[in-house]
Length: 532
Image (cartoon, rainbow, N blue to C red; front, side):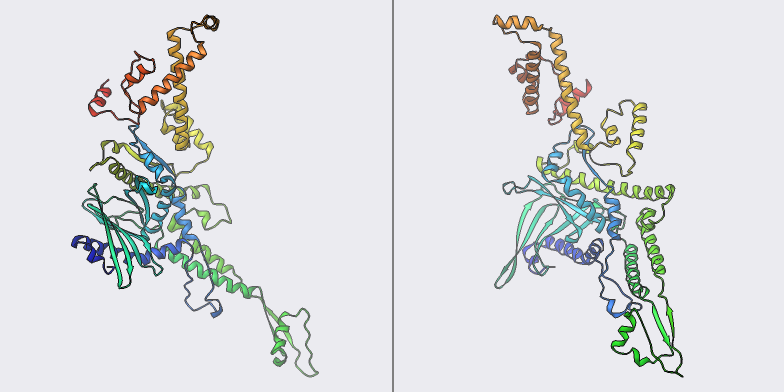
C-alpha cells in the first residue's frame, strides 16, 4: 500500500484499497510487456551463440502482435445504440456528449491487448465543461479491479489518474458500491500527505463497466489476445531476422583464399588493398611455388527465409490470421482464405458480444445517475449496442443477398434490420428515416387539404382581389404544413396536444394517443394504448 493512504481511509476502505493496489502492482509488469509487444518495441533476446558482439545491440522491430490485435478490432465496427421499443432514453445524447463513438474503439483495442479495459461512469463537472454524466475509458495498465463472482459485477475498482516524474501515483480514484473516493497526494516540506474527497454513490454498485476479451470462468476479466506463444514466436522471428542480417554481410562478400603466397604481403594496409582492389597482382621468384587463388561463395540466406516463414505460419495459426500473412508469394486457395476468415469472424463476433455488454452496462449506469434511480428502468432491457457484421463481403454479393431476402420476407427491405444488412451505417439509416417522415408529413397535409375541398387558383385570385382572404392551394398547403410542424415541436416539448392544436387553429384535430419517442406515457396510459 502507498504510505499515508491507510491513515486517510476507514478500515474497510483501506483493506479494499490495499487489495486493489496490490492487483495493480502485480499485473502492471505483464501489462507493460504486452504494450511493448503491441507497439513493436520488444527488445532482441539473444542466446549469445550465433551473433557477433558487434551486432548484439542491434535494434530490430516486428509488428506482428499489433497485426494480430488489429485483425479483430478492425473488423469490430461500432454501429451505435438501438432499442426494440424505439425509446433510447436519451442514451444517444449521453454517448454524443462523451464522444463515445470515437473513444469506444480505442477501449476495445486496449481490451484486446491487456484482456480487459473499463468504462467508468460518474457525475461530471458541468461548470468546467464536462458532461453531466461522465463516461471515461480506462486501460488495464493504469487500473485495477476485483471481480465479485456471486454478484457477477465488480467489487471494487481503482484508477491511477496521475503520476509524478518518478512514476509514483499522485492522484487515484477508487470506486466502491457506496462511494467514489478521489485520493490526491500533497507534497509538503515534512513529507507527503493524502487528501480524500468522497462522493456518495447512489447506485449501490460499482459504476464501472468492464470490457472483457476472452472471458473464462477462472479468468472473469479475460485473456489478452497477445498470448505467451505469440510473444515467443515474435522473439524467435526477431533473432532469425538479425541472423539473416549477419549472413547477408558474408553472402555479399565472398571469401578468397590464396595458396602458396607469402602471408606477409597481405598484412597491415595491404590486407585491405587485397580485398577491395579491382586489379590484383602478385610477384613471385623462380623456384617458389606458384600461388593459386580459390573463391568460396558465402552461405545462402535461404535457410533464414524459410525459418522466418515457419515462425510466421506458427504466429498466424495462433492468431487465426489469413494464410497470406505467412506466405504472400503465392495466392492461397479460396477455401483456405475462407477457412481462416471464418475462425477470425467467429472470434470477432464473440468479442463484440462481450464489448456490447460492457457498453450497455455503462449507459445503464449513466441513465440511473441522470434520473436519480437506484435500479435500471424496464426500458433499458430493450437497449442494445450494435456492431456491423464482421463478415466483410463484396458489395455485389451483399446486394444480391439483400434483394433475395427483401423479396421473400415481407417488410425486410423497409426495416432497419434490412438496411443494416444492406450495409447502410447508423447515420445513413437515421437520415433516411428523417426524410421518409418529412415526406409522410407532406402527404398528410395534401390528404387533409383534399378532404377539406380544393379552391381553384382563379377563385383564390378573384377572392383575394375582393379582399375576401381566400388562400391559393399552394399557400393553403404551406400554411397547413407550417402549423403541423409547429404542432410537432410543441408536442415534443411536452405541451398538451389538444391545447397546442387549439392554439394553432387546428381545433377538433383527433389524436391517436401516441407520443414521440422523446416522451414517455405513464404505465397505465401506455397499457391502454397498447390494448387499442
